[in-house]
Length: 110
Image 1 (cartoon, rainbow, N blue to C red):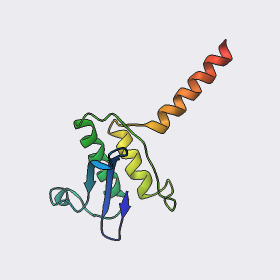
Image 2 (cartoon, helix red, strand yellow; image 1 turned 45 degrees about the horizontal axis):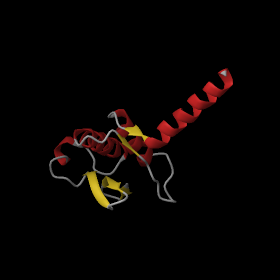
Image 3 (cartoon, rainbow, N blue to C red; image 1 turned 90 degrees about the vertical axis):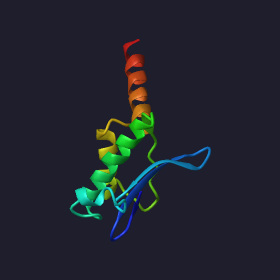
Image 4 (cartoon, helix red, strand yellow; image 1 turned 120 degrees about the vertical axis):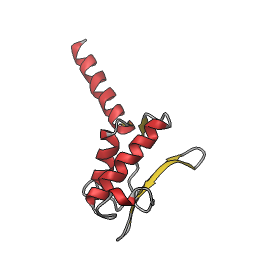
């Protein structure tokens, strides 16, 4: 995710090959007419939704989120991540947490 004073952009990178799998940006001419603003939290949410839809169209059901050191989970960052999740893309960190909870519950019942 990258934020400037004018635009919001997000991309998904395949780590082993270092290639961009999918991306979305408020700089795209096709998206600008449907957006009131290109830099605020609402724009970040719209970019997250579009990115999530593009990932599902490409057959990518889950991604891992890596935040930069200075990025915190609030504001525009939260809007992008939550919109990707609402579009139907699973976050790998959440899947691992659910697996750990399931295993812990399984162990306590045995």
